Amino acid sequence: GAGVSQTPSNKVTEKGKYVELRCDPISGHTALYWYRQSLGQGPEFLIYFQGTGAADDSGLPNDRFFAVRPEGSVSTLKIQRTERGDSAVYLCASSLGGGVTDTQYFGPGTRLTVL
Amino acid sequence: DAKTTQPPSMDCAEGRAANLPCNHSTISGNEYVYWYRQIHSQGPQYIIHGLKNNETNEMASLIITEDRKSSTLILPHATLRDTAVYYCIVRYNAGNMLTFGGGTRLMVKP
Image (cartoon, rainbow over all chains, first blue to last red; front, side):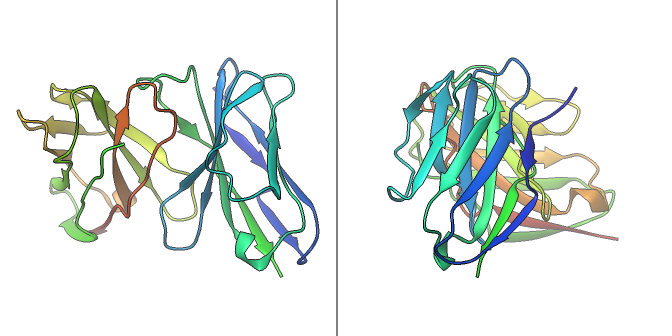
């Protein structure tokens, strides 16, 4: 079946601009996660949704970052006033539920470059 | 989540078994061991997970020591396509996120 998809695959923007990154989870998965991966590092957790609500946003680095999942399916990660340090690969994952034995399946990521 | 320690890199000959170790000496009784891998420019791919017992699936085997302080991921017949960074993660019940460490960069050589 279809896996997690993310669009766009690449995004180049200028410092100070606003960007939106989209994630389409696996159909029927109630849990959705956003991670960020800098070059040479492992992914770092940003936010976790259970259904429509953000159950854990402790990984968001500052208030320029915001994410929504209004209908409990597609999610959008929004970054305001982008900075060069925001350049990274943004990964989305989904799982059937949020439990420890619910495997997270990752999308291919969106590579964000802030010039 | 408990901290894990993995060697930064390993080599393996094509066709041989690749044995990737992971130390998680502070693991607690209800934490699961998960393995993911990440091939260059792709998202992490789930491999296998376990709690106490050894596990096997079509991709790999997971051997967990009796005291659960360490584990080994075994790829029985490594191919060039298995070249990737392999991440060992311990995950607490009801903990949502995966905490990735540095992983092991496995290079499979012809």
